[in-house]
View 1 (spheres, rainbow, N blue to C red):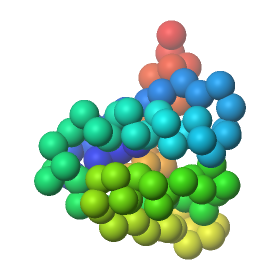
View 2: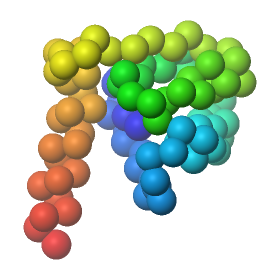
View 3: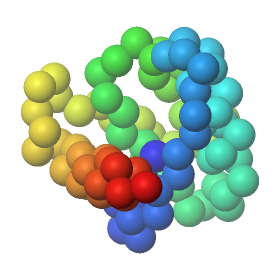
Length: 91
């Protein structure tokens, strides 16, 4: 997860792409923040985000989805993924 303004990036190792596991990890990370800080959450169109409505209700935020096959909608996260890959490959 990446905050678009501050570029703070949070990563978790997942055992699978199971939607419930992704939901639990996101919930545990996002509930540590003051709820007024989080306004919206944008997701990829993937099955692993099937519980997006639970996160939206729990945090009282609006959720959005990117358009399929459109990298323009998620430039920040694509950039952070590239930075992470470059950093991890150096080790």
